[in-house]
Length: 629
Image 1 (cartoon, one colour):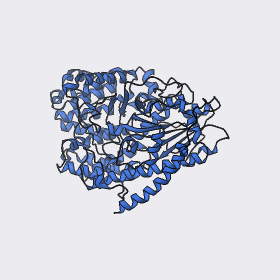
Image 2 (image 1 turned 60 degrees about the vertical axis):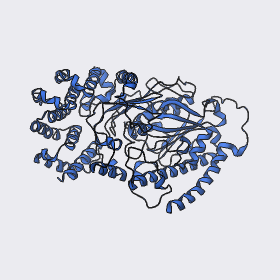
Image 3 (image 1 turned 180 degrees about the vertical axis):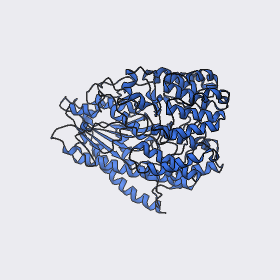
Image 4 (image 1 turned 45 degrees about the vertical axis):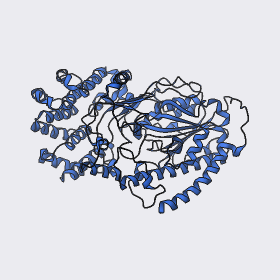
């Protein structure tokens, strides 16, 4: 009964906030003036961005009957709801790179989680352009930009940053980042709930049990609490007399947050809520429709923001403004990407058009549900894994723990959870081929740097941005991408070509050639000699890939020797690749020397601050626990 009691209390709070917000949005029923003059150059709009973390559109305004989000619903009623808004990647740091630069992270070499690689000097974080125009720029408070910071773009960035500190009459741009819905809020179960778990909308990919239902109810509780915070922010804006001067964006920083959404290339991990409100003064900038099915991407947000302020987006931005003076025609497609997630390697790209979500997996031998220390802290993830190990899941629920297909195709109107893969359905063959081509052309057009593996890219770039190094040194990115395509889709038809590319001068080409041998499975056994002859490759990352291929070829002893060498490599990413490979092995294959090294890594890397060291620690600790080392 506690959830009922709390729901009543919560409802009382929400009613008060609705009334306050109603004064702001609807002017207490006072009709708007029939006309509003366009503002002059001196009347630049204030712009407020409200960002919540790790949430798909679990909001009443998006048709979610389980959600209690009265403030966001009111904002949606008065503003524009974007039905097809997408993150560029289903996790925070690489998404926030794109949100702060307007450039694709995989074009800049910054797609891997917490990598902090440098970018070209000409790329300025977008608040710099607003600041140049006279805006007071403040951020409260999260950054997590996945590259080297540019703190000078903010007048203030802190937990106390606020637009109230600007000069009189100065326009402001202010970000409020709300962490209430972050996945970490689910790590500790709670005793009381606002939402009734019995009514929780358990998706088809999750097992339906008490733990999962409580987690879903708990998460919707967090959405309600976040909605309260939105109401408080809007109330403050009204009280300070700035509501009539401020354009408001609300959006989530990627989908999520329960397992199987955040971090994963599906509709639930990529789609985000986006609501934009224009006050009367700037209503001429508002789209005609109150609900828009236009495809918009995070990469478009900075360009759109600048366009609303009358600034032409700089050439380096990949985004296309969907509002303002420099608005462009609607997109036909949006593009998304996924690289390493914390301690686990993977590589995928995706395309979304008005009907379909297409996903291309370049490491299909990797299961979706690779063990991630942080992900497994969620009760739902633990019970989902336990149910799979016990054989209690159906086909859809089991997909997460099994190898991926090289291609996925989902008809979103009929499959909003993206669980029914149509890639092998002949009725959709033309759509598959079309979107495959769209993706293939795009990764070449942008010179997608995600295909250069960590463990190689530091050698390629030296002390330069990877973007610059690839162009200055004529790195054969076209051949690298082509080899990854040959390796990951029907490699059995390309096996001879892959073997020949094991001798290529570029290590990334050799890496993908070896990866293709591994993906080919039993076919690799026919090429044992070719693999054994290349065990002395000068690249540690290539050696790790050859070790994986040798395991598939049945050359276990040689593979384990290469794994031992990889663990001793000076590059942390080579170490981590070896640990990832060990995760897939039976315990009886792991040598005593490797076990000793893993135990040493737990002690050696536990308290190191660098992200790579932390990932080595997590992967090693997992192996100690898994195998009882």
